[in-house]
Image 1 (tube, rainbow, N blue to C red):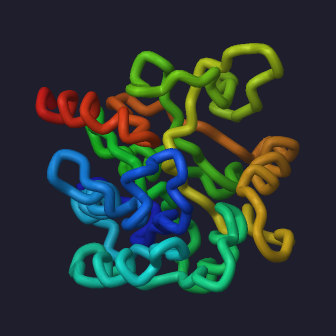
Image 2 (cartoon, rainbow, N blue to C red):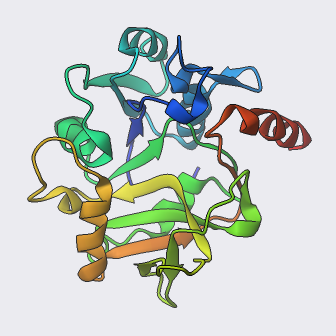
Length: 238
């Protein structure tokens, strides 16, 4: 197994799952089942397979059900970042969980499903990681490997891997997969309360410290009920 940059991951699982309604009326989105398995278990199983031993899962919407589900796991060992009182969005969620997170740490969305390329994405991120140059390293995927995705893309990647934003009215070649490796340096002097990680990313872009790694596997956006069946068919094909 390749050496990993971190033994710890943050799994973002506190969202309201509005796009996944009606499946999320009575259950949190991370517990929606795809190919016989809860979405959050797809993510946690991949962490365990890669050798990540600890995961911090944040909870807000229908938190009791999600907490009970993930705390049953042995690998990775799960602890909870409790956002029941206030949903803190992605950036605020990272700040609240930070005391539980190693430096650096992996971060991924609870609704991520992917098929790795020649080696697992956490090993790929680790091999590329350079803490002297990077505040965060985002796993990005070209449109051809982004299944169920119909947007305009998120980022451009320069020859050394630095990221810049999609320009208004243009299509960007790379889509953020929801998976990244983060230094605590990214979290410094953060706003209070709820805010988007985009605020921290924008500062890192200005400083030339936000990087991207092109994913060599297949990635699936599972944001709506309509995306489940085609994702299940693709997973069956392997």
